[in-house]
Image (cartoon, rainbow, N blue to C red):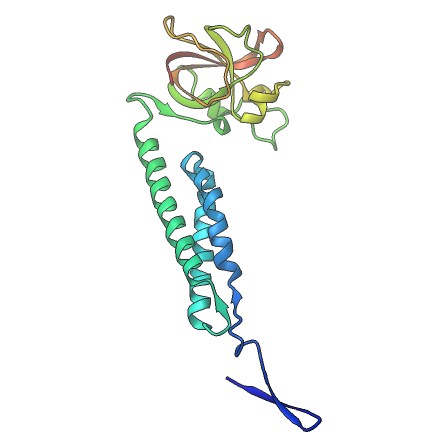
Length: 229
């Protein structure tokens, strides 16, 4: 605690600095940690968003440490505590949910795959259907994706094209040839077009010749679905 002597004519005044006035800066890390909580909630829905509560947790710990080390300069300890604990709870809870879901969502007897396994080597301009996809021909697989809007009609359908991402499913257009799987649903399980992500289990057929599809160039991949969720 320091004071400064200021002479003004015959008067000697005591001038106080910011510390004597009780002013302390609010820790930016603590504030940012609390702000991250809202974004971190997306981690419950999308595993890729788990990086947000992790970042919020680190910011909260940083703010907590800063306020504890320099209590005369920084405030916001309660914000740091809220940000740290809330982001920790979201991180642990959402991670556990995704781990349990991944371990239990694949039906017994089916191999989990993704669209990355169906893509050709970008360095090989002559490769259309990659060996990793050909190896899946006739296999019972489990995959996730969205219905492409080329589906015929708004009512229940027994055939549609599955694509990997929300952008392709919602905005339409011509997807990459290896980003499409023509799906035939079980006889008693038609589907309606929607924007939710589907989980499918069935038998994959891989062909090196394009099969024509209405409204699209064609597909190399087809699936006879046994289960759609």
